[in-house]
Length: 359
Image 1 (cartoon, rainbow, N blue to C red):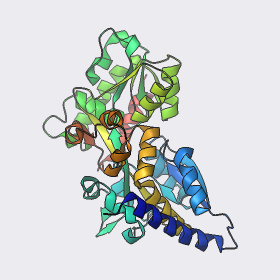
Image 2 (cartoon, rainbow, N blue to C red):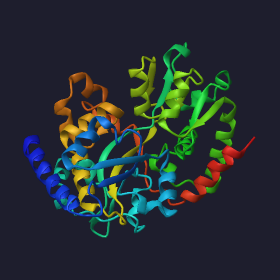
Image 3 (spheres, helix red, strand yellow):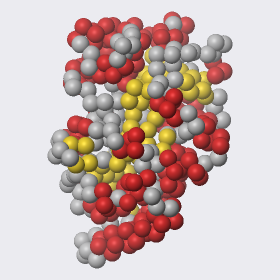
Image 4 (cartoon, helix red, strand yellow):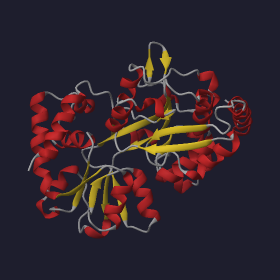
């Protein structure tokens, strides 16, 4: 295990080598690294440090769902990006797709600091090779405006109450399908069963979600969109991200975040390098930088997500560690059913589209 200072020196040396290789090229005097990632993963508060050290420019595009990421990559856009941040629901599929490159972990010295619980998972491994680096993880919690509730909601099932007509927002994502499956009890015996539902169960999920539609003012697709819906007092509750909680609390909104009685789904986001990237050395430098102790702490400050590198906790206050559940991490994880590869993803998508199209 290396100290943060040793890792910083190794990272600086690595960046110098990567920067030298790219700066020596007449094609790109100032190399540009293109990202397709979730919101918050290219915030200037930490990306500027990478740009300055590696003498490069980072350009980021943001995605609103895992399906959007896959659609862009399969639609020919993979060559436009060097680094992507797939979640655990599509990461396994991408390792088999040929769209991402296997990693040489010797080029990512900070990988040894990442939580063994995360690196031991099979999500980004295929044929003995590793294709992704865990970046951060978290739940899809219930968010609600505390001032709008006389009695605080404690279960997803509460959202079906007719008194919330036109006051909720639903994520335009398969996570809404998973949530309804949990409400129907399909994950009671085996929590991961919600990722492998039968046709009959999916029909029940569709019926359940259609019954919720009168309460849904709008579907949200990006974290910024949901933040605005709360700030404009258009909605009072929704499935959201800790990133939205973080943004709203910084803006002074009385937002509360809850893992409901049925539990919730969650994700582990990884960084991957596309097979078509022409900037792989610089991409490796970014992966190493993003899982360093300091950057992980800065990333958590921005997003409210839980760092993949547990050493980031050493740079946090006691209140920060408590707020991220780093002092009860095992108990917290047990409430989350992490996204997995969905064998019949096309069928789930069909059901979700039928819900959206229903009147």
